[in-house]
Image 1 (cartoon, helix red, strand yellow):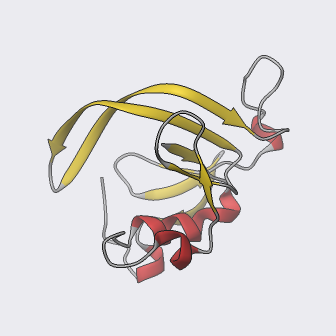
Image 2 (cartoon, helix red, strand yellow):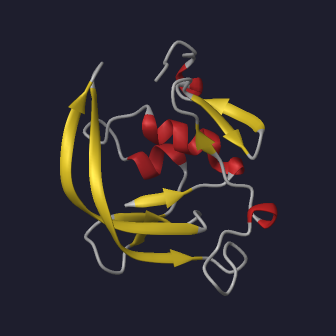
Length: 127
């Protein structure tokens, strides 16, 4: 499952990323709302404007201690205003964020909004 977040959700998503689901409920910790996917058995993040439901095809162990998942998107849902009638992102209309490869920093369309590990006081995590 890939939940595409908004910049306003950067701290909640970092909280999810920095905490183990074996220790605590990530939805409870982050304040995000658990939703249900339509095809796969995985939770959605209701606040995310776009959900990509995926089936894992393969996975690879990559240094230092990461797992890379190869997946096929089998269903997608989008909130009104996130995509146009052709299914293309409406970038100016929705303030998405993502993490840049190699830096661990979060940006939204050219504006940095945070970094991985910020909710636990870490700035040393790099990819």
